Length: 287
View 1 (cartoon, rainbow, N blue to C red):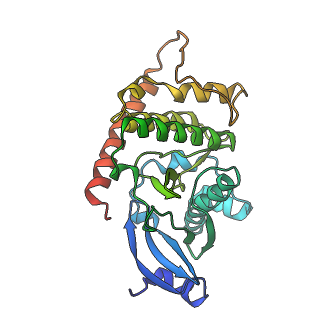
View 2 (spheres, helix red, strand yellow):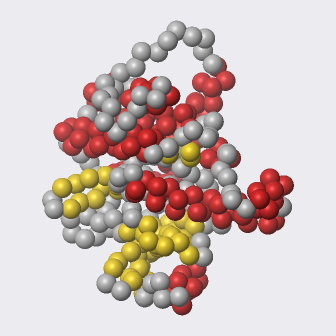
View 3 (cartoon, rainbow, N blue to C red):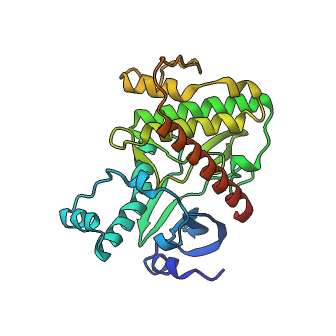
């Protein structure tokens, strides 16, 4: 196919040889299948800020730091240059998170290069070598639901131990890969990932991520709907007791305390917005 303009510089630099096809177009980016030598890769082209539909970006960018002091001042002022630098920082956040999580053993696509606003990374495949499906496109047996849920809860823990919260984890940004007849989930879409210790919204985001996993797999194995891994994981993390091997029960006893109604109402608003976003993704997503 004809290469889109945003991929021309990668062709000219010899980073890719051909563009095979468009894989998907989402709220944050367009993804193309490309060839580089003998490798088949993904090229993720980030959309400009005015073309993105991702909500509450301020929650995700809170306390993100840049090394250049001039850039930091410009970002704080909101100047044109500052907005450009903010956009560059937003795009590079996924690259940084991918390298960080891959090094920690989290199942994410292997990143290869980031050039001119385009991320080159591993193409996650199924048993036939085709692009792996999203969890949302797959039905599971109760046993499979239990297995994949346990795997993903462990991945959330591994991410948190690496200091990262995904922030938008759901069945729409987890792929079901396959290798040697074994299926396993791979976590994608990390430009909104936040630093667990440096973002005031990290706890709320982690609880929502884990709840999304519970609710999705609970469709196939209803016993999962009674679990409460999110608060348990965060409580262990805050207490310095969480490691990759920490046993979890899925139960959490909440202390009696006054209800923070403002927080509850914000969670309700978040849930409504998340549901609306999911419905929009289902209506507009292309295979």
